[in-house]
Length: 260
Image (tube, rainbow, N blue to C red):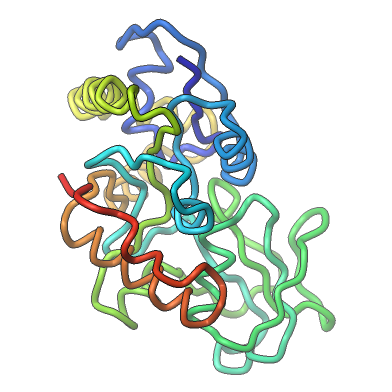
């Protein structure tokens, strides 16, 4: 079994059990940015993987969502943030640099701030007169960007707009016969992470260079269980993105019974 993992630490509470060998399995672990995992999953190169939530709606019929698992937030996510020189209300019509690693967040920022002009982020993030704002995800978003005067957490903006949690990533398989085994594997790894929170935080600190206290706060705001409220938030995201033509219409009907 080929399992795709995020390079960033936001899924570590679920995956560290696999990564450190505490939860053995017959297979191979491959790490990448969300956009790379999306590409590999769609090409059938990964048997079980986390993908951007937007990818599931962008390729209807391709994936079987693993019930009960996600990367999301009920309010602040901290690792999906918009850094801007100007107030958010002035951004429509302005270019916003967006990391190529993003998929869900690229769409979400356009849902929340219609009229912005997405442009590729080239090199290190910086703000100037040509590009007044930049959207970062993952571990990079936990830091700062020089020249920033306004910082917006997209999880907070979504919660304020809808009253619902935001789901940024889902666990999927392209092989229906592996769904049950994949779910069991993730359940065992998540249980190990819940039983060893200090080890999760210490490993995240080693990888990112951030303090354990900072990462404890970060993980406390993340949500890794795809429950009914999270599914409702995801369906609303698909609906709004579909209305704007950012995702195929009808994505909200794809999920089926996937809540824990």
